[in-house]
Length: 198
Image 1 (cartoon, rainbow, N blue to C red):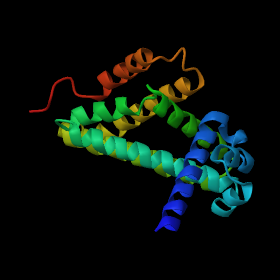
Image 2: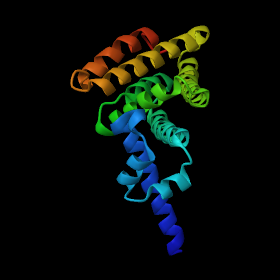
Image 3: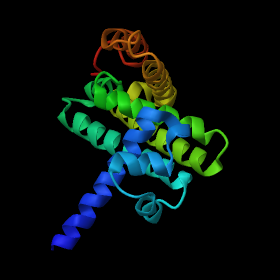
Image 4: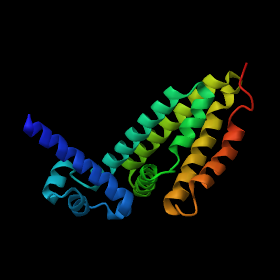
C-alpha cells in the first residue's frame, strides 16, 4: 500500500512540475532538467515517465484540457439554463486568477511548440474543437432559432476567449480581470440572444 501511495505521489509531483515549468518558462524552458529540479528528483526519473519533450508537452496539454473540461462541466451543471451556461463557461475560461493565468500560459506555450509539430498540432486542434463543440451545443439548446448560426457564434466566442487569454498571458498587468471581462461582454452581446427564447 505504501509503495502504491509513493508511486502516485511521485506521478502527481512530476505532473505538477511539467505543468508549472511550461507555465513559467514556456516551451523552450520545458526541459527534463528543469522538470527534475522543480519536482526534486533526478532527470532519469523524469525520462522514465516522459521519454522526450513531446511527451512533456502532450502531458501538459492533457492536464490543461482535463482541468478546463472539469471546470466547464461544473459551470454548465450549475447554470440555470443553456444560455447562462454559455456565459458561465466562456467567462470561467478567462485567466482572471493565478491558476487560470498559468493555464493560459501553458496553452500559449503548447501552441507555440505545435506550430512545427503535427502531433502537437493535432492535439491542440482536437482539444480546441471540444470547447467549440460544447459552446455550439449550448447555443443550440438555448436558442433553437439560431441553430444554423450556432457554430459560427461559438467560433466567435472561442476566438475571443483564446485571443484575450493569449494577451493576458503575455501582459497580465494590462489585461486585468476587468479588461478581460469587458472585452468578452462585447462578444457575448453579439453571440447570445438579446432575450431568452420563448
